Length: 194
Image: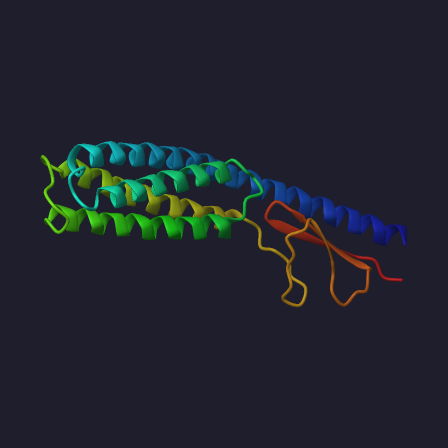
């Protein structure tokens, strides 16, 4: 019995250390995501300034400002999430998908406004288009970073297709004898059978 217990302890230690190593590997990617989200916040702020300078007399002005503020707000949200080592990468992925959709919508709105659909635009708006291209580029880079983080994350263990967000989960079918513990992105299963 002692030999079986020590083998289980050794296995748990090895798996826990490998989980910590994978968490460290994704920490570098998290730092990059933090920098990118900060860059996106600044570009969105710059867009709001440009919209005030060039689009204030158009009927789309408030819509443009609201969408740019939405991009900035979502970038701030992702920035906060990127600081959390326990963040769900699926959550980040979903947030980035919404952010990407909003940026493409905003880019289309800017194009239609420049074409005169919503009134007269003041001055040359080439800088606005450069900022919009930067927004799209940063978002796509962030999506690639999250994908890279997912590659470094250890796969989760599942019991009968069921996974729980809690750090400890009773293994279905083992009636209290099995436990699953989550470390970083990976899980460890312990089974104590009578």
